[in-house]
Image (cartoon, each protein chain N blue to C red):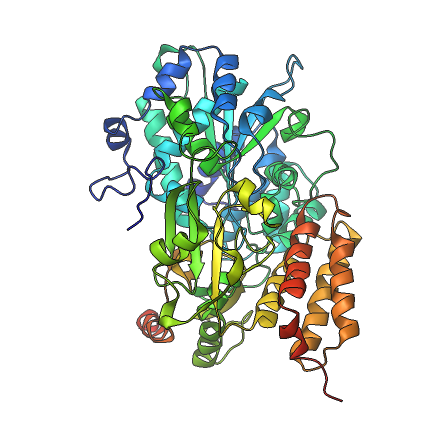
Length: 419
Length: 156
């Protein structure tokens, strides 16, 4: 039986762990922060670079590099904002961390703040995550009461505040520049880039936006021998463990912490316990609903950034949605497309119009009015959204459309008009 | 307009941000909670004054985000997720079942004001689908039977 590799979930998998500050400290918590306070900020950034960690929010951008881009000497304050707006369909891993071990994530956030010289960190949590918001607020209160936040924590001379900020329901706010607009008290509209947030972010100040899971890795990376150990968890350029949100037609859906050299087949059949009701696998949406779909024949592959990219898809936020042989993929694509039509912020024409138009075409199919011409048009509408918008939502809507049409054309033909 | 306790929370929130406008969304949440789950123009004006922004800005924000409501929800607001992972394992059928049971469509409130239904996009409980949020509480792996039971309990 395959086993998890426990770094982020080492406490969560301990049934006796109660997530309090004292329990977290007993598990070795805040030793890394103490060590970090004795280092120079640049040294911390360098260690994070060497660990090779790539952002866990979906884009997989190297975190150390992101931090090194922070503009210096601007005379403005710098900010670190944790992206806890987890909204990519299929993804439910940050919720686990915030709900069940908030201090690990918060220690990571504090390490990040020190590394980039930020004295006020924000956590942007999606508004629907009521239990996580409560858990985080209680954890932050504990940290202030203990003196780990506020003035001069651990005698470091590094004053630090953290604020838990609640969003109000908008997928687009997971996009970092839309998130910053939202944090400023505006509609969440992605910004024109450049300037990137590292130069002009929250209130026009240098800002780094990092995913919750990414930050939760920091206590381990900055711990004893952390950089080397972290690198050894996966193939080169895919270091560390990651949290895989497994959902859909498997016997044991759940969030699993895995190395990055685990085969997708094993995730479905070992961890997930195979397809429920003894059915056969039809396909997998491998990295959140925006990632190109894979057929059952394609899942014999290591589940990491680079191996999936070689297969023409992406690991995204490590959210695998598994579907069985009985699934109507046209209906499934219709549901995905409905999501993007609902969540488009409306700024860029290709996305605003394209998401609705593609949804209408798929609905035509479901009403028995499909045709070869409409299938081509659907693919073309998808193509016209790729790379033509300010943020990646256009691409996110296009990738499922184009991949479903390419991988399952016969399923669409079932819905051609018979006249 | 805020009660004394909540006004203290508003003041605390304002102290966490460099600019008053930054606190707009969290303060709107407090206002909505104070007004039984929805926002009136008077409340939006009040929050606009606190955050030193025009009313039109607040209206723009309120209409952008799905959690802000311009009409009253039921006492129990059933938020049923039908997004991709939930729809794979019965979320859509669960929504239809709930609508039939309460005799209302999503987006509406029962005549007695007890229940309202909202169809949700992904609520981030994908590995525990299908999921429903009732007011602020998550319910996971909900079946039509457990939904019936929950509704009957809440109605008591």
